[in-house]
Image 1 (cartoon, rainbow, N blue to C red):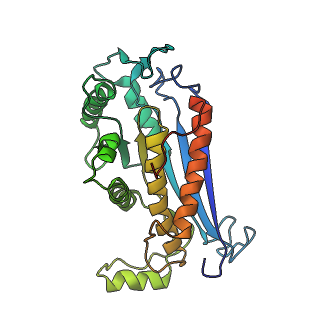
Image 2: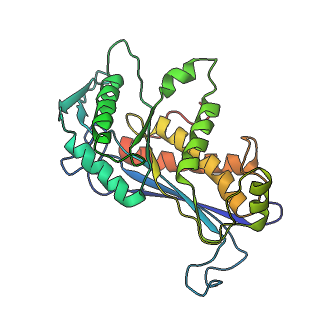
Length: 301
């Protein structure tokens, strides 16, 4: 990029707990672990310094590293689908209705411990159907989050965004990618990204001239909180959403490293196309492990 090497690494960490294939592993278990639980970390760094340099006198203090973490996982309810060779879309059944949502609470407790707050739930399943399938889960999930939020202090509540991505794709008046970009920007404004160094003075001046009077950041920046995306399988729609969030995060990461002048990347740039292809490959691998086949839909479809 502009004559400099920029390294982008995408790591998917799939939980070994409650692991298994689609239709056999759905929802949550009694310990609060969900099926298809995957943490994705996006690392962007330049090589002005090697990994062995210690500019601040301590190991791992190279300031030219940034990272952003996302999470995906099955809807944390007790639900299943009966597999048969006839029905292409087996009916969804909620096996146990817990009025106290204990296991869902355990799941979100785990997310709080791992990532802090806020936890932002991006639920992409269908909301309107002739015969209720996905929407059945959506209603129960929404009720569960409303119940759990009663016991969380203000400022620590789970943020919930339900958006029917399938319906939006069929509506020519809705720009799905633009909507996802808006969601991504709002998410990053809440969680931030990790940057292992001080803010560049040039970036501070840009902020200051734009009216942001916060002082120059002289220490590392941490990501606090996480966006948790899901659809039914946490594959196609989830991967498309995470890809767009990753693209927006990449722009902020490159900006923090001084590689671009503003934290924006258009879809036709090489960097955006590269990160899209990386998420496609990552999604294919997860889909093969969990569903036994490649992704059906991508960002383009």
